[in-house]
Length: 278
Image 1 (cartoon, rainbow, N blue to C red):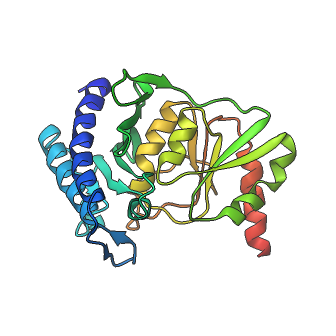
Image 2 (image 1 turned 135 degrees about the vertical axis):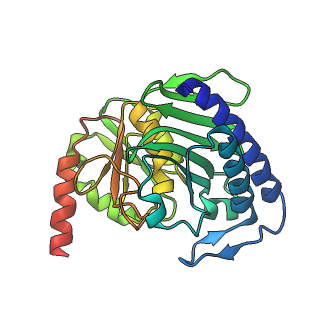
């Protein structure tokens, strides 16, 4: 299956999962429970997981799946996978619970530990982003034809995408060594993987993540951002994030940027010196 056909098939699966998510979103009771790591899970997470698992099993029965809601899957079993689906059925559960509409469905195809295709779907708006190493990056708004997107080169004004919940002070400190390169640095708060979508479509320039995330939080976004011309890299090594190489599914801290010439080395060195001093 080529990646354009793959995008069409995954869009249908995302729309089906989205319908289940929105049914729960319209309820008064989300059936919220706490996982072992104390993060919340709702009836919407679980319903979307079931739809996506069934849809992908029909589409590609030979490709295994790693989902945030697959709690029983061991590293011993998955470490031999050369190819697999990496899935977050509902990215931004806290945004969902707070009803701010900034939550997504994330599905990525991983091959040899790197994301080669990803789709991110926004249930409330029906907006979809997708991208792959063969087709570039795309955005489709509900009722419109898909349009190709591309990250933008650095200009005089820098827009930093940031989490609504984590790390504002750390982010501002991180930007100090490059602040003089720009006439203005502004911050745009956004939930879930939408921060990286803003970079892929050329609305924002940079997103530093200095708080924990898991592999299903970034895989689809990385595929889209790289297809759009940007980078998503380990904040320490500046190499692209890799997947399913460790028992832990927690990512290292990372940087996402739209322009490959972004001065990441300066920020890495600043971060390293700060951690050594502090």
